[in-house]
Length: 268
Image 1 (cartoon, helix red, strand yellow):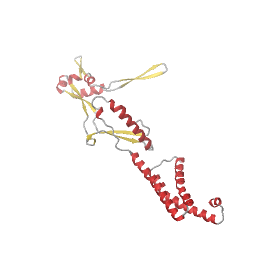
Image 2: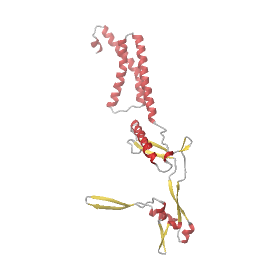
Image 3: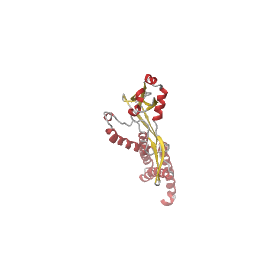
Image 4: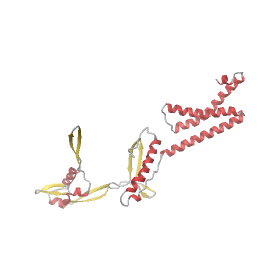
């Protein structure tokens, strides 16, 4: 999800991380002249990945690092804490190791069951429609490719469900504006037909509405602007103004036409 273009951050809430616990035996430490701090320092010293410089070969320089971080409890038990009487003292001699989970400091529940929540934060200025389309595609990939292949009994019981989608509100807003445009235009045409009693003049005014709206979209496109709820609402409100202005212009054309000008001259 973090590799999607336009995604700034992905956070995970709920669940508990796995951790390795080293349970020290104080008596065993004391018998060997050691204490807890000696054990802690030894573990910190061993559990690191260290850069080992570079190796030059032909025209290439290869960076080398020594992998020292623990990957299993056995590696922890095999770490050397100190040397006593010429013999190494291992972690297994003074402590035991077990795998558990971190302390629970919060919880997430969904439909009454423990859950893990993941939120996707998009970058400022990113197109929310494109980001959400890609997020949905990646979630489908996870459901079809990753979840079924998890080992053990965990995989079949995992479900990935999208609980919030910002584009739902955007789509509903666009649908509402479009339906209002159609409804407002139809009502305006009916009212004009009643008062003007001319299909031609009513058709001219009704035609001004889509032409003006399309012209607005072209201007937005030319200036690199994107649509939002405010601009859509403005277009919907402006339909009434378009009808008013179209009637005023049409009346002026008709007045000049009655004055003896040809239709083209009157319109010009």
